[in-house]
Length: 258
Image 1 (cartoon, one colour):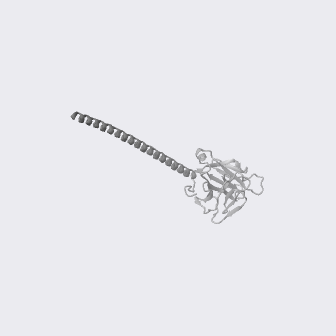
Image 2: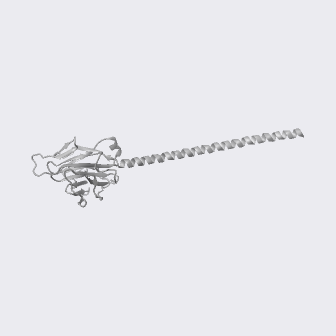
Image 3: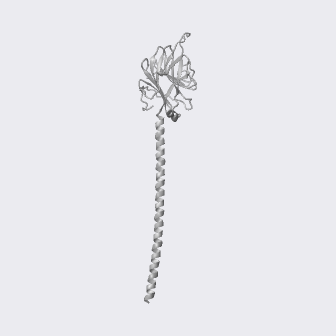
């Protein structure tokens, strides 16, 4: 009787041990699965955070580029032959030929400097340049034009060109030939003044400045699909001259809303 009871007790103990081992194995496997799930979840969250961080960095970079100016220099092949370029001073002057009767309009366009920062901007960023008036006997126009504007004409008179005149008027003509002349809140300028013209490529708004202050002109916009615009100056009388500042240090603070 005692032997049978002992044998039964041993079997019960063996069975309990097996059950405990099986239960422990089940718990271990479950814990491993949970750990793997948590690790996978953490990895997924980390990946999402990396994606969000990348998106934020890209947005910041785009915002930075949208306020990055594009630097220019006078383009000798894109100036009227009656204009002389002084490259050391970034100045241009309307010279007499000795055969002319009445002076005529002459224009000169600047071209972008091929540098990594400018290339990275692409079609966004800010076009801006300032000009110190060195000599002024006749009309001077400061502004922007496309390559289609003839160099023997003036800003604001040719299609898709913007010109701020020294007698206190802004002229603009769109691609359809419609003209716009603005004289309200447009001051005149003369020798010693620094006049600027810019285009915010993100908003497509054209703006003008005088001696570091932006003019209160808000209704000048470039139509979508318009060809590239370039800093341009028109001179009329012999001896008229301006000195260009293509950056990066301007009188006008480009970090302001442009």
